[in-house]
Amino acid sequence: MKLALLFAALVLAATPSFAEDTPKAQIQQVVNRFQAAIKAHDGQALGTLFLPDSKAWIMAMGDSTYQKMRQKHPDAASFKSGTWQEFVAYVGGTKDPIEERFHNVRIDTDGTIASVYFDFEFLTDGKVDNRGAETWQMLRTPDGWKIVAMLYSSNF
Image 1 (cartoon, one colour):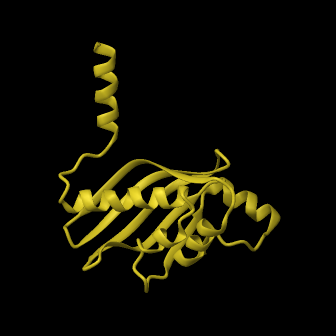
Image 2: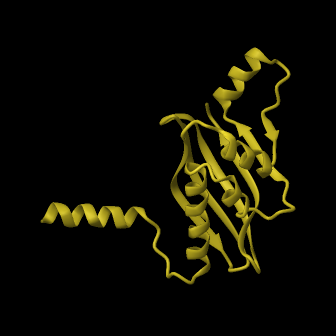
């Protein structure tokens, strides 16, 4: 009995808990929908989470990944710009099982804008093929919270 209570307390402590109608709870719902859309290969649902006009999407290679890339391509840059539309197309089009796991999710907001920061692991076929840290800048719109910008480190 004590072990079951301890386990339940640990599970609850690992999951952020916010009142359902608070901005933090609404943002956590976006985080949850983001992960679910990736796992379901639902590019359409994933696309609804972004501000349509946003083009801010940057991947920065971690040091060891960057050094390996420079061995093959000496002129390689340490970062790469992309778009959320490219990611949505990948998620919707890939046949491989994919998933992105988030750890240590932190949400800061004043109710109008927000920052979400977390550690991630991206899995393909159940194997981690990329990990790093990721941050989103978000905006509350009449249609709900939207991701405006994304920046993440990439360690293959």
